[in-house]
Length: 255
Ligand code: MG
Ligand code: MG
Image (cartoon, rainbow, N blue to C red; front, side):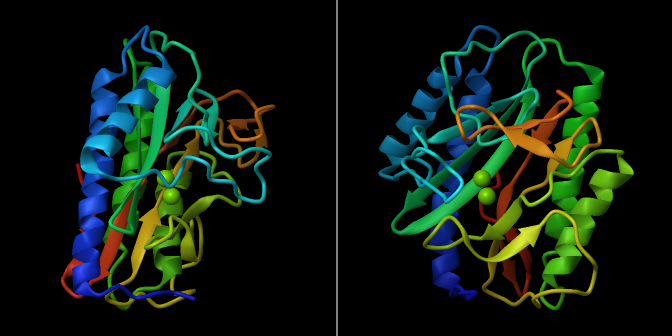
């Protein structure tokens, strides 16, 4: 069931979204050659603590996961697409990092992700990240009253495919609210004019995931969480929580 949020609930979700934005900015600013993924997780925990917020990621255990998620931040490096567990791994020159983060504040959740490079970037990675950001922007632009979920999916997928990138099958965005994952699913590919009609008060996470090698498949690493590309090619993942309103899309996790 899709829950429509009141305007005051959307304002409250914006506050949660801004905690997410601050944590991602802090982690990105700190990420550098030699910095460990666990250090970035610790920074994000500090932002939650200061805000009086909690983590919807920590202890999360969806059906596919063998263990509860042990961190507040997903850190996916290079060929990791999403759901990377922060470890003692220290970032290296040229790494491509995707950070996904959620916060729960006053009972409302925000969810957002960024991709960036560390040290000297590879041109191919910059192009991949720029395309991911364009796909997200196209998805947000399509998140307007009267459109359908398929219009968002089509907008996102078209940008990814036009860049020659793969789109991992079966993963994508979702409704957000009191829970991190609500209805409806928001796929990263779809047909325009299809699916649920968008209405004022819907809040959706839109989250393109792109694979440089063009493949749509992935495998779960031995940790049971991290999804990696089959061909070792690099991946990018960006996400915003977006409210659909009569005055247009409102990006609740804007940085
Ligand atoms: Mg996320
Ligand atoms: Mg999400």
